[in-house]
Image (cartoon, rainbow, N blue to C red; front, side, top):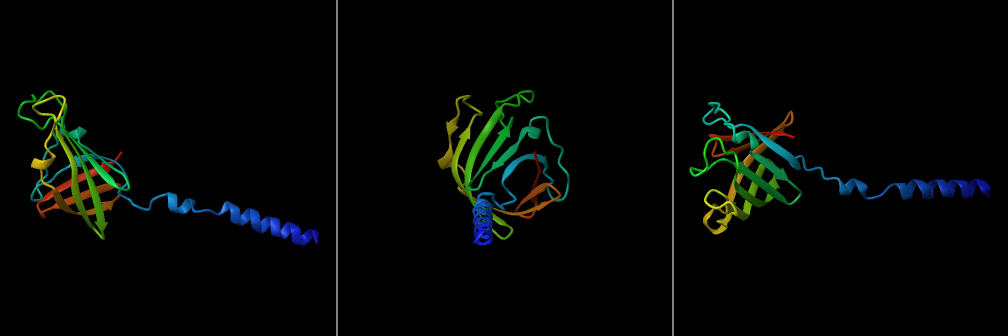
Length: 150
């Protein structure tokens, strides 16, 4: 009787330690923080400007936040302030990301930000790949954005 009780307790403890924790961790390799590394155009490497090095993506299970710095005519080259903040929902199908704009805030003309969501491109598709800690987003075959995980 004692052996059966120990066996049942062992099984109970074993099963109770197995939970759905495996489902709580995403197997989505996109999730995380990414910083721009380069953006070759037509296979020609473009130099990253002082402000561009701050360009980043924050990717969660549901959304992508894109931060662009110093990309305004009204901002001087030495001012690497946040110039654009956009939030996107996304879906992933094999190696294609489809983004749908949720919000786009422009900080170029107003430091408090101007909502220009309705004036921005609403949907974008990228081919993507992740290799050796680098995320490649390819739009129109000639525009490539390469990010590294931070």
